[in-house]
Amino acid sequence: MLHDAKDTVAVAVVEGIEAGTELNAWIMDEDKVITVVAKQPIPIGHKVALRDMEVGQTVFKYGIDIGKVVAPITAGDHAHVHNIKTKRW
Picture 1: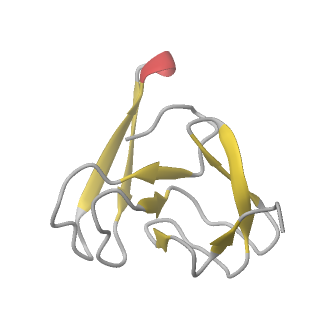
Picture 2: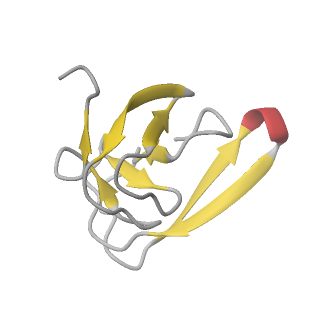
Picture 3: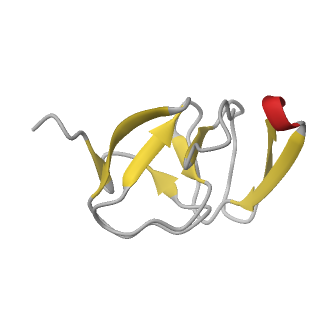
């Protein structure tokens, strides 16, 4: 699920995403579909990276800043607490 064109991650809304699965997301405002291939299993409800991100970059989900990258992320990676942290502390 992808809400905003500036999002750097999307949420997996189906079960059983394995490495190699081609994922599609629709950006409603632009009527555009983007595609990324999962590099790891992505549990339902977890995030998948839509683009490569370097340490220190801001992560956007639903158009909102949700934290910063703390370990390099490439498109298709499982994006979670091991590579993203909140900026609050």
